[in-house]
Image 1: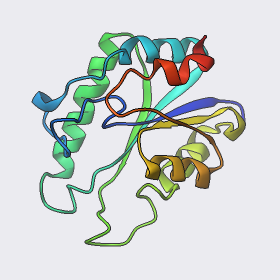
Image 2 (image 1 turned 120 degrees about the vertical axis):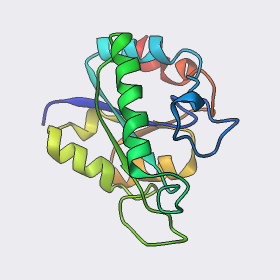
Image 3 (image 1 turned 90 degrees about the vertical axis):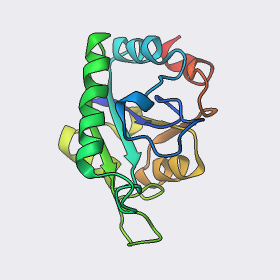
Length: 163
């Protein structure tokens, strides 16, 4: 195990979600203040970046898996335009009112799969999220957790990582 990683929740951490609970269209994307600078700093400190997101709106029929894949492709391109490499985006399409799964946060399967695939170090990895389910997923995965305020610049919460 060698790589250190930052797992980022998507909505409320990277994308402003005060106007939309479900975000699946490119025109809904508004980035939280400081996202590009903060992610660049994390990359410079040697962290691989991953996005993990619950997307229960797929299960509810509000949007399709293709809608999310298209949105994620646009996200990745936007980050690349700022010289930010996101190693991978993973999401859970399930909703607990419709079906049971073990991938949706607060469960940790999405994180565990990435650890296995990329040979990451749990001791040197963090999940940055804005919800209780994010914090529970980090705890179940055995990694450190950083809870930030939704839709606010994460710098005050991560400054010790990038100082």
